Image 1 (spheres, helix red, strand yellow):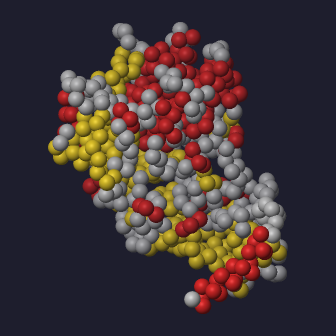
Image 2: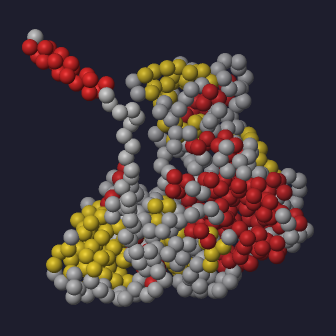
Length: 632
């Protein structure tokens, strides 16, 4: 009772004050911010950095880093951790895995402060008389896949220098010299594009600039075999077990064919030596990333051992190798950055990744890494994917070049409508159009081969960067076959559309068709019903639901688990059988779904049967696409 009276009295005394509150909300002004991180300058850094990495703790995935960074004067200095990573096309530096940072000079530990805006930058005051900063930290690599890609495994590792070094702000990365070294587990072999001298388990790499270091990762492992593919090219294979290294001579010969076909296509080579870094592993995470003089490639088990099963991952090496020309040597001008803090702009990725996606499959077929039939099946799956993509009605291919920055390949609930990095496959389709037009307008005397040699085949051995814009592409194409190329690219790259521009396939002698025969490019662990019910299933259940498809209209999403089909327990074969049966029935397909602890039954009113995409030849004789995929 007393408490109630006290509260009443309090309210009585505060009510007038509340009534007199000023009108409107508080309106503060933002605190000003001054960027004190030096802008990069194209001048030589005064001294050579050293970086040493202890990469022996493969059990816990811990890299231990020690650096020495020369300094020319005392005062304020900023050290940067690489943020914008070439080949990733976005701010993908794993700063969250950097731990234990200590900076010292003359044996005295220095205080550092992280920049309040750019968390990849560290400010430090260099004391008088100091000649160098000594830096130590650990990179705590992922130990489970939910933390990121596994780069350290019991039998191999992938050392990426951008994760294992800091560099001084204020200089172009190519003007900062560095000598790197690394200690690997005893008995392991390491491979990289940078030559090295090995003493025991420690490799000391030749002095290079920091840009080249970041572009030159390392694979190391217990089980290793090297295959020479040409005068300047090696295939360095690492595996979980010796058995996975057992490659037949005819298999390696197809990889030699890849090098031969690429050089025939492009002419010049943009490396002094090229090192394929190739992992066959169930333990280290898969990867496909391009570099000037090497590439990081990782596939699952069975690459050589299950060769006859027609593994579509065999396109990976062709794709990444072609990038030495397409994307590394010639790169969109707005992707050129002075250091790894400067943001990339990706407007030309349709001509970087898109053209490489196209030419990678061409080279793979010409080399025999994939059969012509398998290549046509992949191309059919791509054509259908983009032709039925609802998201292309509102989102142009050009806008998808922002996706590495927007989403960094994070899972999406409605991929077909949101779109993703569609510039890969949509770009492939555009370049198929280019090849077809070149052939048609020249009476069959010109093709994409002429463009690739003209655009990429200069300055043999140059592994710098020659930037390009849309003007360079149009100028080169007009030098081969005059045509309104700019309008073609404007329509196909810059504008939304209801369907994919599949005219290039038809001009090259093939058309997209659907049948009840499964497409061979579909993984055996998947059930692809995207072009019938509008959903696909993987190992863990529903993988995709196509926007506005029959499954979508029935209310299905990725959070659902299928428990039963037409009153019987679910499995992939039973769902396929239900699709077949519904073709001759008026009854819908009934699914029992579970979402969390909720159950519901849905009815999918679909009666079109199984539909899988294929490319069907138009007419007789050798068509343009046949010529495109044939070895040269």
